[in-house]
Each structure stands twice: as structure tokens, then as C-alpha cells.
Image (cartoon, rainbow, N blue to C red; front, side, top):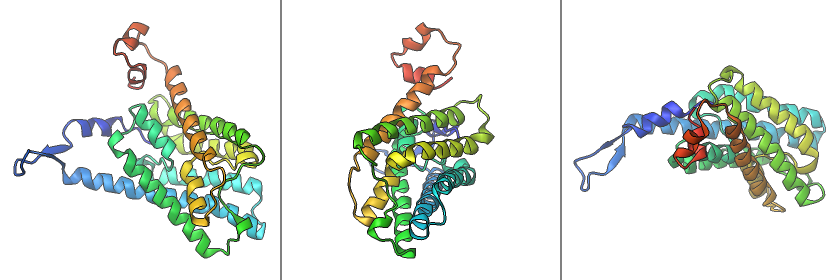
Length: 270
């Protein structure tokens, strides 16, 4: 989970050049910026693909062969996220999750104009991984590797909010605060996912990621209670990101923080 401040600054100060050869003098991003953006998008597709392939794959293998166990599934989710953070985090930021991308953008840690492209990349990676699992394994209706509430959808909604809150709180700490030990970001995030899956898994499936639930649902045509896994993670991620930025240390006075009229903008660039 890398810090995008320097990258955003470059984009805001000349990553695009004006073309005088076209009517209206429209702005076009130079080739270097386009290549870097393409690299980040490809990295996000690949990262999301393998997170979904390994995580959901452990669910499929356990349901069909019974050889993984619930603790094994928890550890697999945490390990694959850790591995992919260290593999492509320095390229794309290793979001793999629309809620992380949106929350980063809301708190000025990610370019807003790239949000739709990253979300599409994540969705493509998740769909490809879900399709691959269905092709490789004889996945029956009872072997569904998506997420479904156990009992009340409201209970699953609440636990999805709490689990995603914790995930985004940790991500905000290790990825956006210069005082954190950046080299440990992958371990911190992966460990958080292991803990979340242990607690929330038996209740909601511990999605914490809309694409993790949407992709299997689309591939296997099962759409029960999908709203839980869209609403819950977004609420949890945004409140988790806001809470970390609220407690982030600053040497500015309250008057300075409120002078611009935007508390979020002031506290996220410390």
C-alpha cells in the first residue's frame, strides 16, 4: 500500500501537456503518464485476480475436498493479500478493493479521476478469477464460493461494517502515515484480514470487498442479499478512513485546521 502524495503532485503539476495542433488546445496526457497508468491498472487486475483465485479457491477446495479447513481459509486470505501487496504494491498501491480506492480518493490519497479505472480493473480481475475457478473445479450449487449471510442479513451487515472499518483503519495507518513502518504494510494488512475472516467469516463470509462478493455471484448467478456486501464494506471503509484521519497527530491549531473549511483536506496532508 504505497503513498500516492508524490504521484498526485506530479499529476497536478504538468503530467499533461497542451496540444496546440488541435482545435481548442485540449489537454492530453503525455505518453509516459499513460504508460504508468496502464501499468498500475494491469497490476491491479493481476493482483485482484490472484487474491480472488487463492482466497476463493481455498473455499472451493475445502467445500469439494474438505482438505483446507476454516483456519486454513483464513490464513490463505491473509497470505495471498500479503504476497500481492509486496508484489505489486509499489506499482499500483495494491488496493484490490473498490472501498479502499474510493476511501483513498475521498481523503486525497489517490487521484479521483483514476477511481473508475481502478474499480473496473478490480472487477475484471475478480470476474476472471471466479470464472477460472468454475472452469477448473466442478463447482455445484452447494459449493458456492461467494458470501451469504448466516442468519439475519442485518447482523451480517453490522459485522461487515466493523470488519471493513478495522481493515481500512489499518490500511490508513500503514499506507498513508509517513511515521508508520512502510515495509511492514503487507504483513499488517494481511494479518488484519486473517483476524477479520476468523471473526466475521462464520457470520457473513467476511467479504470486506464488494468485488469479492459480486464476481462469484455474477458467475454463479446467485444474488441473495448482495446489498449487504456493497453497503457494509463502503460504510466501514469510509468511517475507518475518517476515524484514522481524525486521530492523526498534527502540530496545527484547531483554527488552522478549520480555516480552509475542509477538516478532511487539512488533516490528510500532514
